[in-house]
Amino acid sequence: MFKNKVNGYSTSWFKSLDNLKIISNNFAIGTTNSENNLKEIIDSYCRSLPCDFVKSHPSSLKRKQEQNHSSSRFLWQMKNIPFDGIPFCVISHEILKCKFSMNYNTKKKRKQEDIKREDKEKNESSLSLCPAKITIKKLKRYPTFSLSLKAAKQEKLNKLKKLKEMLDENQNIDDEEIYWLSIPLASYHNHDFQGKDRFINKDILVFIKQMINKGIHSPKKTQSFS
Image 1 (cartoon, rainbow, N blue to C red):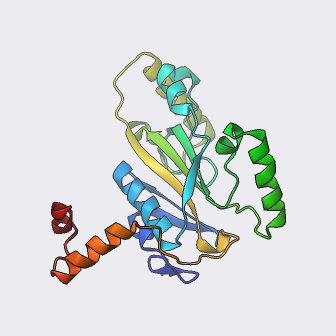
Image 2: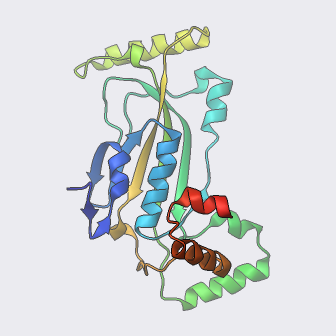
């Protein structure tokens, strides 16, 4: 049922998520093994609301992990990522915030008078800051070091120790990269979705109508006339 609608909103982006789970009826979590799929999922989600998200505080975990394997934290599980028998480390962590939340990075760069003016306008507004955010974690997994789901704690520790030793010795180890996502459902946003079309240049709209009148509906054919 989740691959069709949640809280009345289209959720076709669910179809591209593997290992899909719904958490507290507020978030959809899942994985994908392709960066292209990741982009399609995010784009499809934003179109379904409609709502934009802004990047906030990308981590430097990947750079640290590439510099020194011994500083990487190897795990069997973490919050909302259950134990499946395969060890992993997080090589990047990115957060996309709803456009109705505070954009801290942008605010720091603005002049003080602009900040005061915007704060005053926000205080006068009845709109609260939206808590919705998309969390993306890029994981590197090591299937050759997998264990049984019933493995004991000491067995897990020994396996991770061996993994670290082999990486520090620069031995070739098979690995795979996947993206773990946490996506807020529409009900978690604290603002209305107006469903308005995003801005399109007037000249482009005229051009599209002309192509339709000529019987040209294919996007590729339309682009060839531009």
